[in-house]
Image: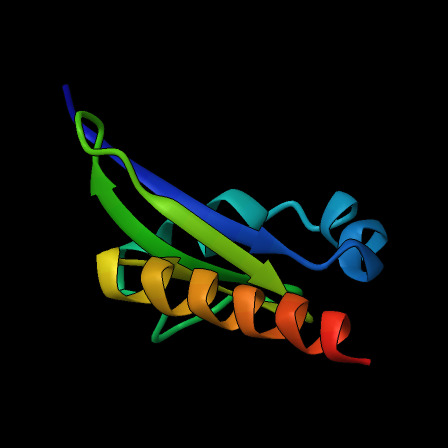
Length: 88
């Protein structure tokens, strides 16, 4: 089917992006370089095949792909926080 790219855009930079006539070229370069040449106000999180299912965790001004281990760790952490709240 092809590839999909997940891009994190920082909304604070949208006004600058709207005025940038070379934004498409910069985005293409960022994707093709594996984010080694990022665009101001955005970053390439990851690329994957369109047939793959991925889970992305966005937090702060970053985002990351969660593999199976990352999802398990996230759920364990959430459960620990919930259990701490019950002890109080």
